[in-house]
Image 1 (tube, rainbow, N blue to C red):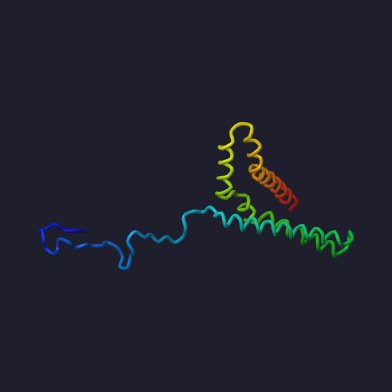
Image 2 (cartoon, rainbow, N blue to C red):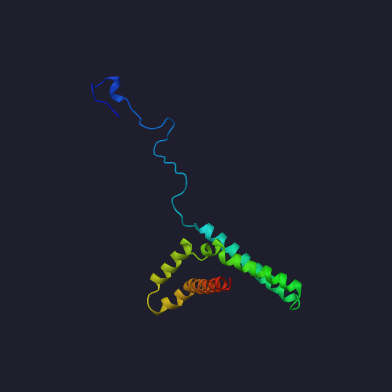
Length: 152
């Protein structure tokens, strides 16, 4: 606060600060970032982990096929496979991996705007295929989750 009691007096140029000692001007400290959306880097990492889990399930399927039907080893491998599938379906990385990064959204929007008319279908198909496939996979996963819940 600048006082204007007497012009030319030293009190005229006093600056008062109403805050905490050591507080920086214009800096707001927050405990956590306010955005709950995953960043592009987090989405990409979730996709890598999701793909890794998927390949582990595929490898486990081959291990099950290595043992003869009805054997105790095959039963144990099948139980492990079922546990891996259940963990895959309930993994929160799966939902994060299905999200689009900002760059992917930008490319889809740019192609949709830049190529109006019949060309949009072809260009949009290249970008939109991934989105459509994700939705199909997500629908299939939901059906499998419901089937697993019905069995238990």
